[in-house]
Length: 76
Image (cartoon, rainbow, N blue to C red; front, side, top):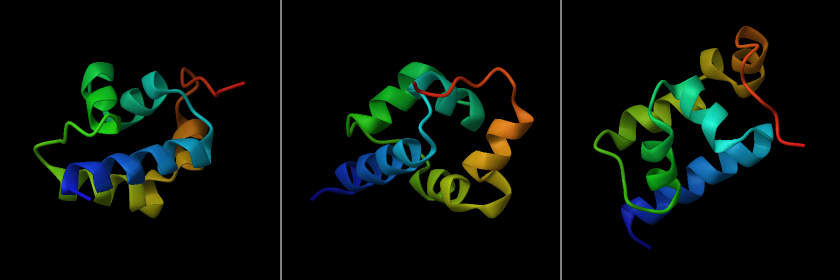
């Protein structure tokens, strides 16, 4: 498994855990939706370590982000 594929799996699992859309996840992380979709498709990201820190950070937990961002849509 390549580093990009591993990152894609981690990001998909993070988003699935919170039950949020790709668009909402991109907003929460402050990156374009297309960039986020590319990460999930295994195309990589120039700063994988920073992305991992963001998705693993307690300060950036999905629950906290959802509470602070009323525009984030949950998956139904």
